[in-house]
Image (tube, rainbow, N blue to C red; front, side):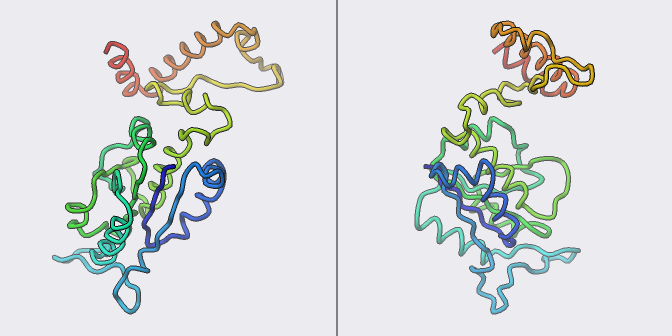
Length: 233
């Protein structure tokens, strides 16, 4: 079973999303073991302070080194971690291939940044992987941590009711998904493509692949180039 430890100064932001839907059910089934750690519990400051002003001046606050080191060292003394992940704007762009790789690990740790970031000595000595989920600014690392956790858990065996669902998601083959439809077949004059109601599974599969390639080429030319490169390999 995969265990994920998430360290945050605002743990309440994580508790509800990780207790519901696919992730929540996976936890109930014993497919994944997720533990949320309040960084303030590891602060040696009498007011449980976890941030301080940056050396050299400047706006904003920085997560202090002491609470982070104390928390991570305690967890590392209890078990061996495959990776200790930090979400940062200058990290590697997080992709489906990263989720696939992380899903086969045994123990993962995710540190959520906050304020203007963390004392850089943490990143230099404790962190093994750094990811960015996009080129925009968020209030903290909790949302990226949720994104990473959800993307990993949903592809664990048994997490989804349909075992093929995760394998056919967008990005698994560097392609966007084909359009999807459900009943009724005709609604206000709008018809579902006939091939999808034909019962011919080979034709359906070919149609979906064609549409996936078309949509990727149209909406994500960068991803389409990656798909072409992988297809030639």
